[in-house]
Image (cartoon, rainbow, N blue to C red):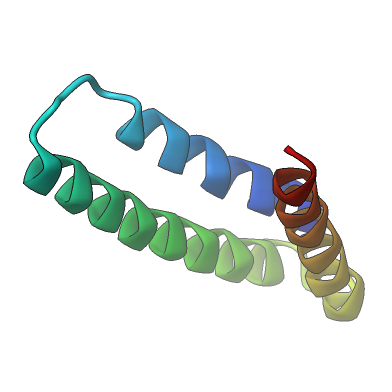
Amino acid sequence: MGGAIAVLGSLVYALIVTRANSDPKAIFRRHFRAEMVKLFITAVLFIAVLVLFPSAASVWLILGFAVTTLAYWFSLLAV
């Protein structure tokens, strides 16, 4: 579930950022807004999982999120 939380946050970020615009200020604002929405959605999903699935192991949830996020970051280094 942690990996899904990371992927969903990144998907929302990508959907917000990919709108066409050439104004640098608008692009910067869009990236900032997308990052804030991504952080909010990530927090909400973590809380939802921990509340709806109390038997879920929180350590593995966080570890899955961390591994997915690190894999994404390392894949960007390879590009």
